[in-house]
Length: 55
Image (cartoon, rainbow, N blue to C red; front, side, top):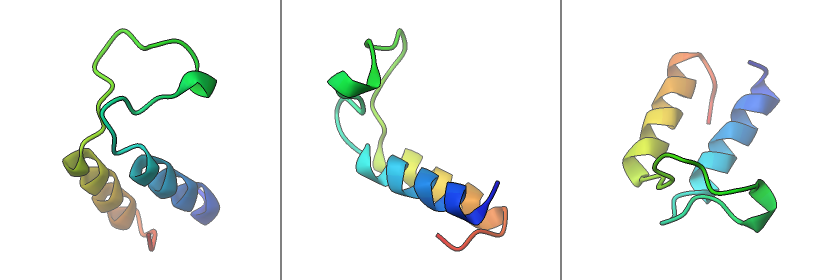
């Protein structure tokens, strides 16, 4: 994953820490849970850091 893609993913997950995680522009409601928690965000950031990205 490029550094730019890692930053975009980190920004995306940070922006989606909400009760829904999706908006009208992002398509139909998914079948599964859509909540992205603070713990989910932290897990993505930890994974990116483990891959060598500075997020």
